[in-house]
Amino acid sequence: ANVRVVKQPHRVLRGRRRTKKQSSAVVRTPENEDEKPAKGGKALRGKRKKRETSPGDAATATGTMATPKKKKIKRSKSGFDAKDHVAKNPHLLERAREIAKILQHLYPDPPVPLNHLDNFTLLVAVMLSAQTTDGKVNDVTKQLFKQCRTPKKLAAISFEELLALVRSVGLAPTKSRNLIKMAQMLLDNFDGKVPSTMEELVQLPGVGRKTASVILCQAFGQPSMPVDTHIHRLTVRWGLAPANATVQHVEAVLSELFPRDSWGAIHLQLIYFGREWCQARRHEAKDCPICSWACTKQKGGRKKDSRRPRSLAEISKMSSPKKASKQIILYSERLKALAEFEDAFINKKTCT
Image (cartoon, rainbow, N blue to C red; front, top):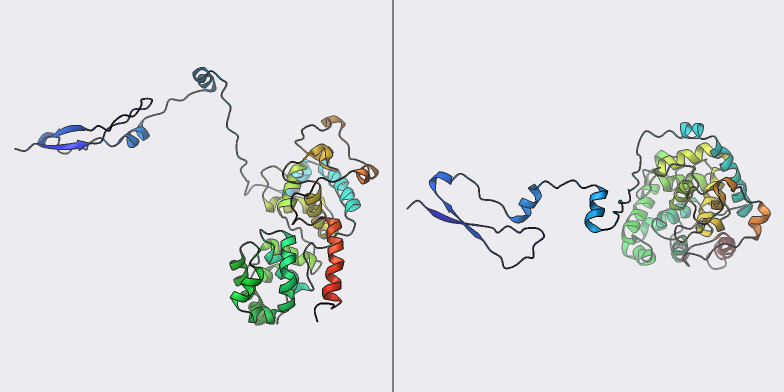
């Protein structure tokens, strides 16, 4: 009278072909009433202890040599001292001097890639450039600066109107809200002027440390070393910083290797070089003016013991690879576009 039947989920055995679902019946009596039924197959498989196999066992089982998994580079967040890194690797100073010489030869007077009229329009352009190419930003700001050249005009525009102007850039809704809030904060707290300190700049909506560094460097001429994806890639590729270096580590290392008064120019020169010569994909180190002798991992190039910096005459005869994207602005293209922009806006041919 005290007997009841409980259905137990079927157990699926590994290595066997699954057939029709089956279940086993467990007779539950007062003696085993407190015992819990066995769980499903997935739970049982999770409890089974896996047998540790070595690469030799895997090779024997499959008949081929087991290939180890590629380790992911972990970014170091602490315990890195840029001064100590340079002190332990004094050859990096000489390498940095050779790099600076080549960059100065290729880009003697690097302009800011983003079109702007003053400090405020530069701040707007830099905020729009996050996760967007400079070419796309310059296309958008042509119409934007005609309508919103001052904080007062930008703060007065509606969100829908601003979104329609900047819709083609990435993260347009978020950037539109931040631009309007930023302009309003400039009017309320800074008399409509862009602040000139890091502490004040990062208080503005949508302005982080990198954006603030660009403004301090390019608008106010204060020494700073903003690090973007190109600069981080080149610094690690040339062995100036460790492979697991963070953006903060790269900034600290470059600040130690290059003179303080050259940070603004080096920042722009590295960006132009990364776009034109040292691209992220399909990069041939042997055809690069700097990677051919400074790259830490090189395939098909010269032997390590025979590497030497190329002469400036050799570099002048080299031809850069094909552009990775039409929206990427090269140095020669920027010089031409900058002259056209100045004629259109600063000379007031199309904007009064």
